[in-house]
Image (tube, rainbow over all chains, first blue to last red; front, side):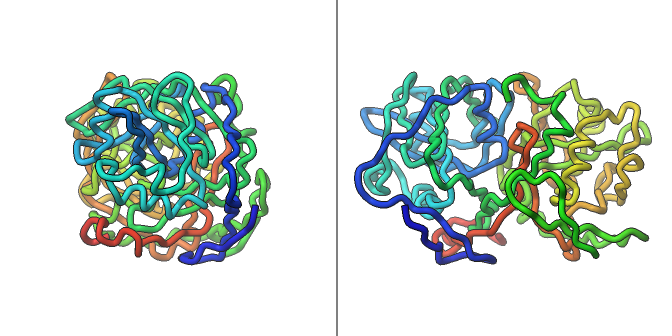
Length: 207
Length: 207
């Protein structure tokens, strides 16, 4: 691993751990499904992979929310995204959680269409086989959740997903996620506040 | 202003700017509605105020998402929350954005019911008059969005809100929001990545 600094910080210097080149080492391990919502709830930018007509694709999303702990998750998208047809037709996807070293790639992923580009190849990302669906995990992400599409609400332009299997890379050195402000800037994860003592009686089982 | 440290940090020391005591000074100023989604999109914990039967109430929510730039916003809640009836009946609320000095209060707000408690009084918060609805702004928050309830989707347990007026406290010294991990810990805002140069052509007008 080497440590580099990202050029375009708005307010502070920040060190980002980039993986060195060479062979990709699969480090994704199975993760308890009942805790998978904890990756989504804080609102990080997500990558969504799909499989359609023998091709993988990736889109970036920032509009999503947890709907329950199982986890049920809503993601807002519509026909203007190439991934939309894959979601509607094959009714499955992977929600992958990138960390800050992938921020620029994530913006680029959101800025081009899978209609003409193989985004895994274009952006040097590793498609790993999921266990229960055909859409792939992204090896370079911190965590992945395999999901089935259970509903599409056309009136609100969003899909309801049911998480069915979760993965986590315990060896991922960089664990800071990033959150879109919607104006081209992204807030990165800072320190964590531990307030478990105030709410232990309210936490769902296993969390 | 004085600077103090929060006791229960999980991983790092963090300075939080707390306001000194004394008279509350109203510093909320009108904010462009078309930029209001930028407070919600990064996924911070929100406070939701309502007005019902001559009483104000507050709840904390972490499950929400932006649905469009106008802004349309979804918030997940249901009959198990006391605020639910107020939302359903009066069809309005304020989304208020707390910063990290309000983290502990926010957890406590989420841990008790407005059925028996005046939460503004209990937690020393200032209800300020909104402009277009009866639900109040929270003077101690960084930003507030007045919203109308436009839809309730019982099948998914969430409300669709239409933001109609926005406020921002330019004099708020602490601007770091916090994001629920769902396990009793909260990730605070760290440094901001500025990637506007990669996506300027895609940003909505005025943002």
